[in-house]
Length: 312
Ligand code: GH3
Ligand code: MG
Ligand code: MG
Ligand code: MG
Image (tube, rainbow, N blue to C red):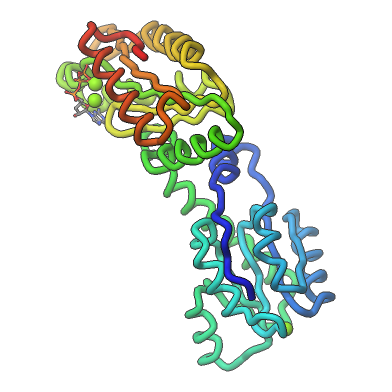
């Protein structure tokens, strides 16, 4: 087996999560040196509504996973080119595949050898021959559970937006892509104005309502390839692909006006909220850290110039 050299992009994965409906079919990679069996298992899964690819040469697995966004791998244990455990170990060294579920499908019945193989980084063991219905049920169960885990890992619990880590990871990918494609990119930090006063006046649950309303405004009014996350507390971050700094400022200003127009009701009173924002651009700021710092500085300036405004 060859050592992995490619780092895996999370871009497609994150993109897929921005649009969780309708649910995408489960993608399964079936690896078995017995080509007929691999194809049979793939066909069984496809008939159950999944997308399955059969591979009989383990050497092809890494390359295939670059194009095929697998939710799960079904892997033979004994293959002449490279054993299942060897292949699992290699996959586990690649950042994007660290948590990819690997299930052995093998005729090995010795429990000790099964456990040894699992220790190489697999998540389950199914013994051959396996009933088609059982194969479908096992794959469904594990893939669904993994999707839920992934979503918990990248989503913010209150707003459903990307969490801090996910949006920062996305910024990193976006900067790398913009550099490669010589493209424009902007980053905006958004912070609710006098939010502490909202909590103090109307209570924490009402504060939460404001944060959810802001996240709805951001989600509804941004384009599909703009990524928005909750940076922390009452701060949000937006990655805007392919726009100039002036365009980004206009977009965030539009959002600012929309949000400022929302009326909230609490304790028989009406109130409104505003936010301030700072925007930075690539390539003026050429790294994710530099972009974040510049947006943060601009946000500070927006606060000190009176709030409810966007600075660049
Ligand atoms: P500024 O205009 O300068 O940004 O003032 P501010 O009051 O918005 O800023 P400050 O940092 O003083 O207060 C932020 C408040 O946000 C304090 C914190 O309790 C509150 N907060 C953070 N996370 C949450 C949350 O999830 N829900 C609610 N309701 N409040 C939160
Ligand atoms: Mg075999
Ligand atoms: Mg703040
Ligand atoms: Mg604030």
